[in-house]
Image (cartoon, rainbow, N blue to C red; front, side, top):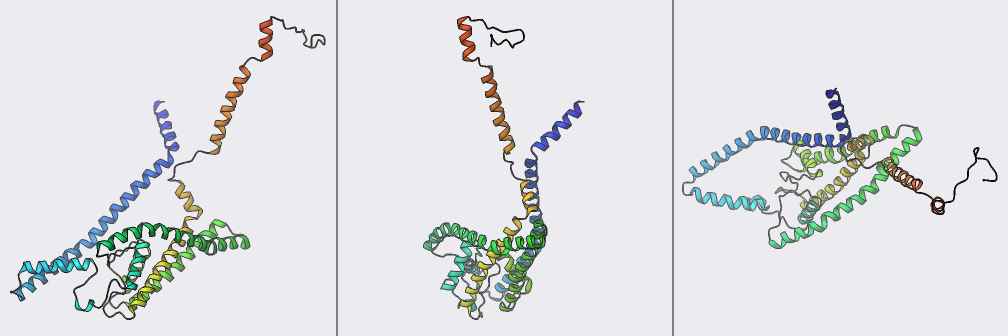
Length: 335
């Protein structure tokens, strides 16, 4: 008997706090996914890192052997200075000295990566004034960019999602949820084709040392605003029309970001995903519960009013006047 009561109480507890349990499972699943990614990246990339370290040590040792007049300390200082400059986007290589990082087109490209929070990291401010301005520019510019993107996406959604889904639903009589799912899949396919596959082919042709996978990797890393910075177009020494190329990449990043937001918003409006999100949200107080509370308060007030003696009863009790009643209750004289 006690076991049955305890089991029923546990079931009732789980059902009452169902969204909380779903949320805890969501947090656990997220951290497990995070750990899974760390394990995979570590197991895949660690051997390549070790191999690269061994190659660098071998090259350094061979260079010191071929140049005995150069000490290891002087070489270390030179490499440290060169790597520090490379972190600021300045290379000591002779074939890279022709490209400037802060001409107008490069600065425009940098501003777009800052406002879109992509941040490749290949070019950073060198001066204290530039760093201070970058902070102020980002504090004001990132919310401005979010407002701009929200307004643009809201207007595009009317023509790209709402009207096509409603047209097919009304003209063909199909289920609105089914039409929305098919439309979202088609929209995602068009977006991936036009802003991932086609640009990857173009980048692999324009960037001499990029293959298709590296170009597709750059497109995905950029439009998802991850921005690792290991692949940045237009940085080659023999890049033709570099200024125009940088402007075109800036336009591509902004348009691609808008398209990605439209696709994500289209998927977020699907009824299936809305129901999935509600599983992890806190439940709001239902209108029925509020109505029950109001009815309970009204009932309590009515009971109090009924239980309170009337003025006439108080007066009769004070004057001592007897109340006349007939046995049948229908005497006209008494009434």
